[in-house]
Amino acid sequence: MRRGGGGGLRRLWPWRARDESALAETEAEITAFGEALNAHSFSPGQPGATDAMRAELARALDAYEQAKRYFVGGRTWADTRDVPRALDEGRHALACLDALLTDEPLPERMPLCFFDARHGRAVRQASWAPPGGIARDIAVCAADAVRLAESPAPIAPRPEPTSKLPGAQPRTAKYPTTTPVSAPQLQVSGKGSSGEQTHQLAMPSYRPALMVFSTNAPGRVDLRFEGRKGRSSRLYRLTGDGAALIARIPLPEAKKAVAFRVFAAGGREAWTATPAPLREVPRFHDEINGTGSDVVHYRGEPGPGVLRYEGPSVIELEALDGRLAYRVMVVAGSSGERTFQWPGRGYYQVRSAGAWSLSAA
Image 1: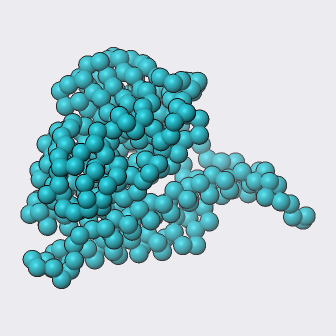
Image 2: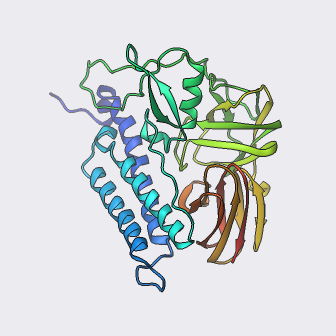
Image 3: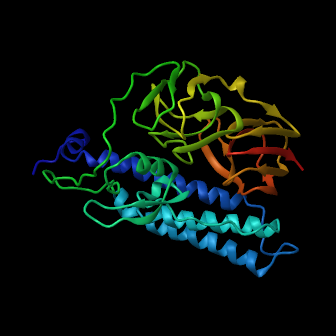
């Protein structure tokens, strides 16, 4: 057989480009978790360190090494499908370590989403039956919980990307039909939504930029992005904690537009998504307060910090790079107060569903 150039290979095997993109995302997640391990302040020999703390650190390190072993040698996403579970084990170990360090209860642990581990941690149990099968309770992410509640037909799990020989027939999944993707707009508006339409927010001429998502009334919205590049997760759970919702969300690494879906929890409240420049990000040195998800600009020096949180679920503080892409997890936990280490000046993303405050200790 005559060997062609790169373009010929891509025409013969179109799955290769998809696998390369998925592998790059997987490698970036492993790197980010490794950086989180390196940045953690705990040392096994520090005063007050216990065997339980050292065991959780060892579990996190073992999970990191396991994730790397799963990844090495992989040629398709399917080859590395166990990486998300290894990383989830490691992140839970670090969360347990943080709880032990601050004398907090150990965090509850839900499994990864039943339909796709890449969706992240499940948030609830839902009843589901495979086509022609018997209903059972499964653990699902927020977006899939909405999808199950609104689709009367059985939903099959999303198939994993696999390498196929030319001419092979791919497996298909039964999903609710969606409406066509909207044209890119500089401002996107709507009322409620059940995720049936994919919206596109046109990227502004200035970069990097934010999305400001707001509602005209109190409510809760799950915002799901179609692309994950530069993000720690595709799903944002947004709430105004009893007030009209307004959230700033990073818009990293997009050429022309960012695609997203809106899942509103009841009601038909109007919402708007619009881009905004970095000057819209609040700056602080010593302390800042907020509600729900936001982006903040820390202007202080590296050193100890304090996170206080009152709300459901968990809160996460993530460090971003100069392009507002995810760099590393700084601290995560449930309601209460916990200490952490500020890596230094820069932009940080708060992901929460309640009231919070950040300060330099």
